[in-house]
Image (cartoon, rainbow, N blue to C red; front, side, top):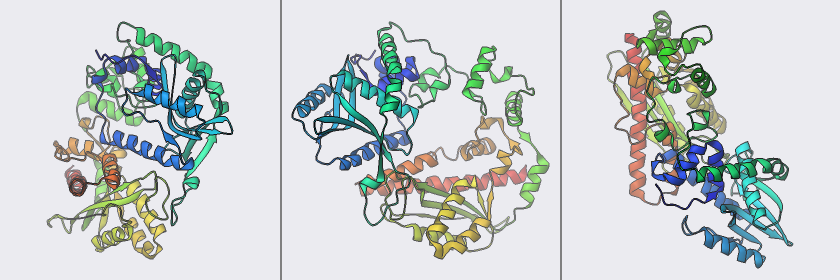
Length: 493
């Protein structure tokens, strides 16, 4: 058991509201947590950077960030002293009430009145953010500080980076006092429940459910799900967590127990029957029709993009998709040699024109361009054609040549039980090819590729940057090679 003192904080209260078992494990068996992945860490770092950037809205503040997580009493004392001195702005102001900690991004003292600001690296104000703000307001005011107002600072989704960054246009400030007042009774009740959880002698018994993933993916899923068999109803794809709970209530705990009837939609029937029989599902004529319209020469194409919360290139908006890498495998004929071309943008440069020119050059010959799920590729190419009209006609010509290889899987011309309900390129590739081409890749998926490249903007070690750029290229090359192999397998089928 972790000897860490059982104090509560805003984040642990949010955790307890989502799942009492998660709170107990976090406080007493912290080492059982799942390791934070690259994507999760990047989201945390992004939020931290956006929070720091918001300090520019209220310059000249004193920072009360503790040196480590166990030193919040120092932050509380520093905050109290600065407020007594009526310092105009305090960053990471810390408060404590009834053993519960809260740190506030920005506290402003203006004409003897206190104003609270919490920063979020998103466009909209969610119910979770409002609950978060209510907890902070409750702890701060109960600790003896009267707040005139409480606002959430979010990103303005209409902001466009011009010649220089304008912090006041980038952020939006919204008072949420009315929403906070509505939620205070719920927070008071939740605090009482959380304290009861921490006083419990044993781990609470909480069944698996939608709280495992909403509003946040729980970092104890590895522990709670480790004894769940792979044919459990909980792994059933294409069915909501609520529907899975309904199955459990009826005594149906495994996929093999499900009766295939009209209560299921067509997709669920195929997936469940395939799983129960452990046989692939094949609509051969539909697959033949799809394949018959695709002729050599062929390009197999994949693009990777990143989405910086704070725009880094002129003319872009927060979270715009900026392409930085593409991979192309090319085959001139059925018996032709498989060739490969790729391009990756240097970190820190607005390289979009070079990116366009390399892509257009690589696809200048005739031939269909095969893509797995065209949404991202087409969205990026359309945006490039709009932002760089000199290349519009050529880019649109490439778009017209794109064919989506996801179609035969999405439309269930073919489904393999080893996909386990997933329709990702990796899952389909592993099932069809009976091997994992991505096993050797340091980068595991597109979301991770985006996170890795985004963080390179803040990486000072050039050797590490060069290594990770090569790892990104290797991942993207694997993507298009697997796409090629999948298409070859579909032709055989």
